[in-house]
Image (cartoon, helix red, strand yellow):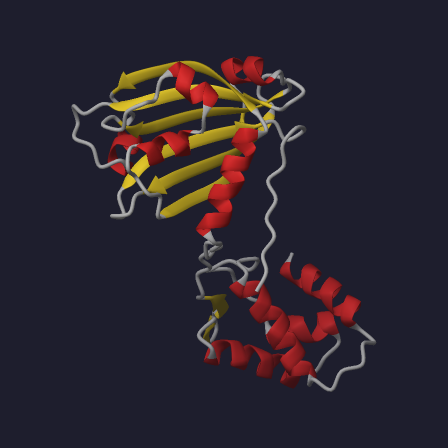
Length: 253
Protein backbone atom coordinates (compact mmCIF):
# COMPACT_ATOMS: atom_id res chain seq x y z
CA UNK A 1 0.00 0.00 0.00
CA UNK A 2 2.87 2.39 0.83
CA UNK A 3 4.63 1.60 -2.44
CA UNK A 4 1.39 2.17 -4.36
CA UNK A 5 0.90 5.54 -2.68
CA UNK A 6 4.51 6.52 -3.33
CA UNK A 7 4.24 5.57 -7.00
CA UNK A 8 1.13 7.71 -7.33
CA UNK A 9 2.83 10.72 -5.70
CA UNK A 10 5.98 10.19 -7.74
CA UNK A 11 4.03 9.98 -10.99
CA UNK A 12 2.18 13.19 -10.16
CA UNK A 13 5.47 14.98 -9.60
CA UNK A 14 7.17 13.50 -12.67
CA UNK A 15 8.21 16.02 -15.26
CA UNK A 16 8.11 18.93 -12.84
CA UNK A 17 11.20 21.07 -13.28
CA UNK A 18 13.23 21.00 -10.08
CA UNK A 19 16.82 21.41 -9.08
CA UNK A 20 16.19 19.37 -5.91
CA UNK A 21 18.16 16.10 -6.04
CA UNK A 22 16.08 12.94 -6.45
CA UNK A 23 17.21 11.50 -3.13
CA UNK A 24 15.98 14.63 -1.33
CA UNK A 25 12.64 14.54 -3.14
CA UNK A 26 12.16 10.95 -2.00
CA UNK A 27 13.38 11.77 1.52
CA UNK A 28 10.94 14.71 1.74
CA UNK A 29 8.01 12.63 0.50
CA UNK A 30 8.69 9.85 3.00
CA UNK A 31 9.33 12.28 5.85
CA UNK A 32 6.04 14.04 5.13
CA UNK A 33 4.19 10.73 5.29
CA UNK A 34 5.84 9.75 8.57
CA UNK A 35 5.47 13.06 10.40
CA UNK A 36 1.83 13.41 9.33
CA UNK A 37 0.95 9.98 10.71
CA UNK A 38 0.09 8.56 7.29
CA UNK A 39 2.96 6.09 7.71
CA UNK A 40 2.45 4.82 11.25
CA UNK A 41 4.96 4.10 13.98
CA UNK A 42 6.14 0.49 13.74
CA UNK A 43 5.26 0.16 10.06
CA UNK A 44 7.90 -1.56 7.92
CA UNK A 45 9.42 0.62 5.23
CA UNK A 46 10.06 -0.55 1.66
CA UNK A 47 13.53 -1.87 0.91
CA UNK A 48 15.98 0.08 -1.20
CA UNK A 49 15.42 -2.45 -3.99
CA UNK A 50 11.64 -2.02 -3.83
CA UNK A 51 11.96 1.77 -3.96
CA UNK A 52 14.41 1.55 -6.83
CA UNK A 53 12.17 -0.68 -8.93
CA UNK A 54 8.89 1.04 -8.12
CA UNK A 55 10.10 4.61 -8.69
CA UNK A 56 12.65 3.91 -11.41
CA UNK A 57 15.54 5.39 -9.43
CA UNK A 58 18.94 4.01 -8.53
CA UNK A 59 19.50 2.04 -5.34
CA UNK A 60 22.09 4.67 -4.35
CA UNK A 61 19.37 7.33 -4.50
CA UNK A 62 16.98 5.19 -2.44
CA UNK A 63 19.71 4.35 0.10
CA UNK A 64 20.63 7.99 0.60
CA UNK A 65 17.00 8.95 1.22
CA UNK A 66 16.59 6.16 3.76
CA UNK A 67 19.88 7.10 5.43
CA UNK A 68 18.61 10.66 5.85
CA UNK A 69 15.43 9.40 7.50
CA UNK A 70 17.50 7.26 9.87
CA UNK A 71 19.77 10.23 10.68
CA UNK A 72 16.66 12.24 11.60
CA UNK A 73 15.53 9.48 13.97
CA UNK A 74 12.39 8.81 11.94
CA UNK A 75 13.23 5.20 11.10
CA UNK A 76 15.47 2.47 12.51
CA UNK A 77 17.48 0.29 10.12
CA UNK A 78 18.51 -3.22 11.15
CA UNK A 79 20.59 -5.49 8.97
CA UNK A 80 18.58 -8.52 7.90
CA UNK A 81 15.34 -7.12 9.37
CA UNK A 82 14.73 -4.06 7.25
CA UNK A 83 13.66 -0.56 8.28
CA UNK A 84 10.83 0.40 10.63
CA UNK A 85 9.21 3.72 11.49
CA UNK A 86 10.21 4.86 14.97
CA UNK A 87 8.56 8.28 14.92
CA UNK A 88 5.27 8.34 16.81
CA UNK A 89 2.82 10.83 15.39
CA UNK A 90 0.94 12.94 17.91
CA UNK A 91 -1.51 15.53 16.56
CA UNK A 92 -0.99 19.03 17.89
CA UNK A 93 -4.09 20.92 19.02
CA UNK A 94 -4.92 23.97 16.94
CA UNK A 95 -4.64 27.13 19.01
CA UNK A 96 -6.90 30.05 18.25
CA UNK A 97 -7.80 33.30 20.07
CA UNK A 98 -10.24 32.61 22.91
CA UNK A 99 -12.06 35.91 22.43
CA UNK A 100 -13.09 35.01 18.88
CA UNK A 101 -14.40 31.62 19.98
CA UNK A 102 -16.45 33.05 22.85
CA UNK A 103 -17.86 35.75 20.58
CA UNK A 104 -18.90 33.10 18.05
CA UNK A 105 -20.64 31.08 20.77
CA UNK A 106 -22.47 34.17 22.02
CA UNK A 107 -23.46 35.06 18.45
CA UNK A 108 -24.87 31.58 17.82
CA UNK A 109 -26.88 31.93 21.02
CA UNK A 110 -28.40 35.19 19.78
CA UNK A 111 -29.40 33.76 16.40
CA UNK A 112 -30.88 30.45 17.49
CA UNK A 113 -33.46 29.14 19.94
CA UNK A 114 -33.01 26.74 22.86
CA UNK A 115 -35.45 24.24 24.28
CA UNK A 116 -34.44 22.87 27.67
CA UNK A 117 -35.46 19.27 28.23
CA UNK A 118 -34.22 19.02 31.81
CA UNK A 119 -32.15 20.76 34.50
CA UNK A 120 -31.13 18.51 37.39
CA UNK A 121 -28.67 18.30 40.26
CA UNK A 122 -27.11 14.84 39.88
CA UNK A 123 -23.93 12.92 40.58
CA UNK A 124 -22.15 12.89 37.21
CA UNK A 125 -20.56 9.91 35.47
CA UNK A 126 -17.07 9.01 36.63
CA UNK A 127 -15.21 10.64 33.70
CA UNK A 128 -17.15 13.89 34.20
CA UNK A 129 -16.58 13.79 37.97
CA UNK A 130 -12.83 13.46 37.45
CA UNK A 131 -12.77 16.26 34.88
CA UNK A 132 -14.62 18.59 37.24
CA UNK A 133 -12.43 17.42 40.14
CA UNK A 134 -15.43 16.49 42.31
CA UNK A 135 -15.63 14.19 45.29
CA UNK A 136 -17.55 10.93 44.82
CA UNK A 137 -20.67 12.22 46.57
CA UNK A 138 -20.68 15.68 44.96
CA UNK A 139 -23.37 16.65 42.49
CA UNK A 140 -23.22 18.87 39.40
CA UNK A 141 -25.85 20.65 37.34
CA UNK A 142 -26.85 18.57 34.32
CA UNK A 143 -28.64 20.38 31.51
CA UNK A 144 -30.12 18.58 28.52
CA UNK A 145 -31.31 20.79 25.68
CA UNK A 146 -31.76 21.19 21.94
CA UNK A 147 -31.04 24.17 19.70
CA UNK A 148 -33.12 25.42 16.76
CA UNK A 149 -32.33 27.79 13.93
CA UNK A 150 -34.50 30.83 13.26
CA UNK A 151 -36.68 28.77 10.87
CA UNK A 152 -37.46 26.29 13.64
CA UNK A 153 -35.20 23.46 12.43
CA UNK A 154 -33.59 21.59 15.31
CA UNK A 155 -29.88 21.11 14.56
CA UNK A 156 -28.16 20.33 17.87
CA UNK A 157 -28.52 18.27 21.04
CA UNK A 158 -26.47 19.13 24.15
CA UNK A 159 -25.69 17.54 27.49
CA UNK A 160 -23.67 19.75 29.84
CA UNK A 161 -22.38 19.41 33.39
CA UNK A 162 -21.59 22.52 35.43
CA UNK A 163 -20.22 22.91 38.96
CA UNK A 164 -23.20 22.93 41.30
CA UNK A 165 -22.16 26.07 43.22
CA UNK A 166 -22.75 28.17 40.10
CA UNK A 167 -26.27 29.57 40.38
CA UNK A 168 -28.91 30.68 37.88
CA UNK A 169 -29.19 27.58 35.71
CA UNK A 170 -32.97 27.39 35.60
CA UNK A 171 -34.98 26.12 32.62
CA UNK A 172 -36.44 29.56 31.99
CA UNK A 173 -33.09 31.35 32.20
CA UNK A 174 -31.15 28.89 30.03
CA UNK A 175 -33.79 29.28 27.31
CA UNK A 176 -33.41 33.07 27.41
CA UNK A 177 -29.65 33.57 27.64
CA UNK A 178 -26.44 31.66 26.97
CA UNK A 179 -24.86 29.43 29.60
CA UNK A 180 -21.62 31.39 29.20
CA UNK A 181 -23.38 34.58 30.27
CA UNK A 182 -24.83 32.79 33.32
CA UNK A 183 -21.36 31.53 34.23
CA UNK A 184 -20.08 35.11 33.88
CA UNK A 185 -22.85 36.35 36.21
CA UNK A 186 -21.36 34.05 38.85
CA UNK A 187 -18.10 36.01 38.70
CA UNK A 188 -16.31 33.37 36.61
CA UNK A 189 -14.04 34.54 33.81
CA UNK A 190 -13.44 31.86 31.19
CA UNK A 191 -9.69 31.79 30.58
CA UNK A 192 -9.42 28.76 28.30
CA UNK A 193 -11.63 26.49 26.21
CA UNK A 194 -10.58 23.04 25.02
CA UNK A 195 -12.67 21.31 22.41
CA UNK A 196 -12.41 18.23 20.24
CA UNK A 197 -14.40 17.24 17.19
CA UNK A 198 -15.48 13.73 16.37
CA UNK A 199 -18.43 11.70 15.19
CA UNK A 200 -21.16 9.70 16.93
CA UNK A 201 -24.16 7.69 15.81
CA UNK A 202 -27.56 8.84 17.01
CA UNK A 203 -29.37 6.61 19.47
CA UNK A 204 -33.16 6.43 19.33
CA UNK A 205 -33.69 9.29 21.81
CA UNK A 206 -31.36 11.73 20.04
CA UNK A 207 -32.53 10.64 16.59
CA UNK A 208 -36.12 11.52 17.49
CA UNK A 209 -35.10 14.93 18.83
CA UNK A 210 -32.99 15.82 15.78
CA UNK A 211 -35.42 14.29 13.28
CA UNK A 212 -32.80 11.98 11.81
CA UNK A 213 -32.70 8.24 11.23
CA UNK A 214 -31.75 5.98 14.11
CA UNK A 215 -27.98 5.39 14.09
CA UNK A 216 -27.42 8.35 11.73
CA UNK A 217 -23.92 9.85 11.78
CA UNK A 218 -23.71 13.10 13.75
CA UNK A 219 -20.96 15.64 14.29
CA UNK A 220 -19.78 15.44 17.90
CA UNK A 221 -18.19 18.31 19.81
CA UNK A 222 -16.73 18.00 23.30
CA UNK A 223 -15.86 21.20 25.13
CA UNK A 224 -14.33 22.08 28.51
CA UNK A 225 -14.41 25.59 30.01
CA UNK A 226 -11.69 26.68 32.44
CA UNK A 227 -11.89 29.50 34.97
CA UNK A 228 -9.19 32.08 35.68
CA UNK A 229 -7.48 29.66 38.09
CA UNK A 230 -7.22 26.87 35.52
CA UNK A 231 -10.06 24.76 36.94
CA UNK A 232 -12.67 23.10 34.72
CA UNK A 233 -16.06 24.56 35.64
CA UNK A 234 -18.17 23.17 32.81
CA UNK A 235 -18.09 20.29 30.33
CA UNK A 236 -20.35 19.89 27.33
CA UNK A 237 -21.05 17.32 24.64
CA UNK A 238 -22.90 18.56 21.57
CA UNK A 239 -24.30 16.43 18.76
CA UNK A 240 -25.11 18.16 15.47
CA UNK A 241 -27.11 17.18 12.40
CA UNK A 242 -24.44 17.62 9.68
CA UNK A 243 -27.12 18.48 7.11
CA UNK A 244 -28.06 21.58 9.12
CA UNK A 245 -24.82 22.50 10.85
CA UNK A 246 -21.19 22.73 9.74
CA UNK A 247 -18.20 23.65 11.88
CA UNK A 248 -15.81 26.01 10.10
CA UNK A 249 -12.48 27.53 11.09
CA UNK A 250 -10.34 30.16 9.42
CA UNK A 251 -6.70 30.09 10.51
CA UNK A 252 -4.47 33.01 9.66
CA UNK A 253 -1.01 34.15 10.64
